[in-house]
Length: 83
Image (cartoon, rainbow, N blue to C red; front, side):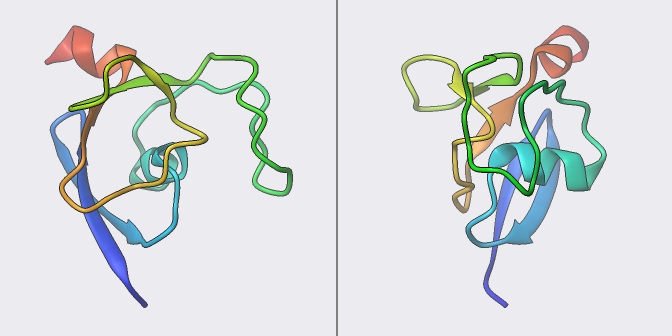
């Protein structure tokens, strides 16, 4: 199994390659609110509830549609408020 390691809200997370930032956060126990996401459905991203900031990306992203990359650094709205 190929994995990637990224940082979300200062916490290092290692997940299977191809997972989204939302799935990585959920699996790591990091709170990212979501509304229209379900693992059995395709990615819609229309609710815009689960927006995260990813370093080196010019604007906030829908965490359900961004695939994790090795070394990626992101922050959730809650993570920004706490550190």
